[in-house]
Each structure stands twice: as structure tokens, then as C-alpha cells.
Amino acid sequence: MLPTHLSRSLAVAGLLALTACGAAPAPAAPAAAPAGAHSGHTGGVGLYAVQSGPLGVVATDTDGHLLYRSDADSADPPTSTCTGACAQTWLPLTVADGAEPELLGVDEERVGRLPRPDGDDQLTLAGWPLYHHVDDTGGLTDTGQNGADGTWFAVTPTGEKVTP
Image (cartoon, helix red, strand yellow):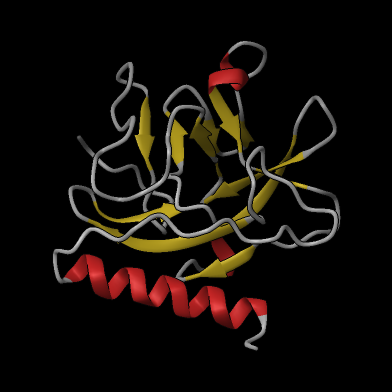
């Protein structure tokens, strides 16, 4: 049996290969969360660079959900303005204190943490707080919520926003 990180790497490599060929990959099965990690969804916490059909190379979480940043937030210093009802729709990508996210195709130097009011640490990419949308089901064959309200944008593996 392959180690978890190796099997995830092979799964993502397979998704990249399928997507590059124009085939729509099936959503990956949720992975087990590392001890002490959570992110508001079923899988472990991670940031993956993945080729999507309509958006190009984007960042996803371990469940294949597109990751987003908000123009209402700040990268310098990293600041999230999404709390309360906003955080019920735009779920912050969080990691427990001491847990490390799994990275694939994302530069470790660009990944940071931002304390949330609830005590969790929200992951940042190039300083931008990261979120996924409550209604995103995973998969890379549509544009998800990219451009929502003129504020929310899918994020590239370098932290740039994807333009609609």
C-alpha cells in the first residue's frame, strides 16, 4: 500500500494528465485529515496546483474545491474581512495550530497563516486569506464562483486572482 502523501500526489498527477487531455476527471474521494487538521470539509488540509478546463492553473484544496480570495481582504498585512454570515458562505480554509498543510505545486514560501476570531488559523497564499464556497462540489470543469459579486476570485498557485 502506498503512503498517503504519495497516493495523493499520484492522484493529483493523474487529474493533471486527464485535464490536460481535455477529459473531465471524476471528483477524488475525500482523504483522511491529518491529526489536528480541519478545513470545514471532509478531507485533510492541503493546497494543490491543478489545471482546470476553463480557468487554467488554479489552487484547490484536498477535496478538489476551488480556492478563492476576496478583494475585500488584504495581503499586506494579511487581513480577512469575511466573518459572521460571510464565513458561512465563504468557508475559510483553516488548519489547527501546529498542523502543516500538504502542498503540491504550491511554493511553501508563499503559504502563511492568519489567526481567526474563533481561534483557528486561516491559510493564506501570497498573503491573501483563502476560502472555498459552501456550494462548490469540487471538480474542475466549470468556473465555480469565480468573479462572484465582483469581489471573489479563484486563486492561482502563486496567489494571483484568476480573472473571469
